Image 1 (cartoon, helix red, strand yellow):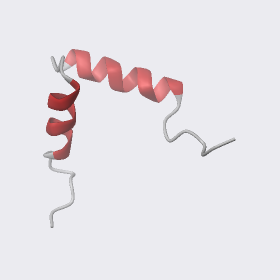
Image 2 (tube, rainbow, N blue to C red):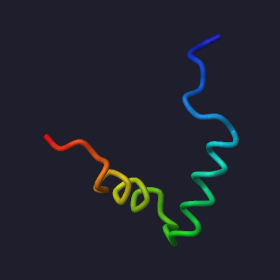
Image 3 (cartoon, rainbow, N blue to C red):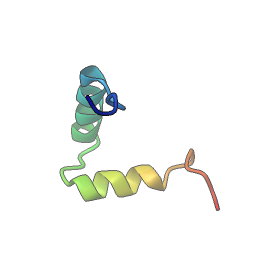
Image 4 (cartoon, rainbow, N blue to C red):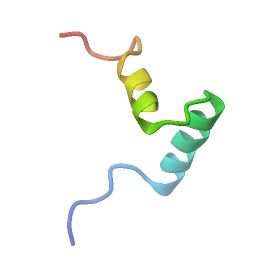
Length: 43
């Protein structure tokens, strides 16, 4: 059975649309920009 998915199909579509609208065509660039935002926890 495995673990339940952390993201629904509609959530995945929303992330893909946001990625395209922001002009991030690279997954690595998209993840890097998301981890350095103002909502990220500071050490």
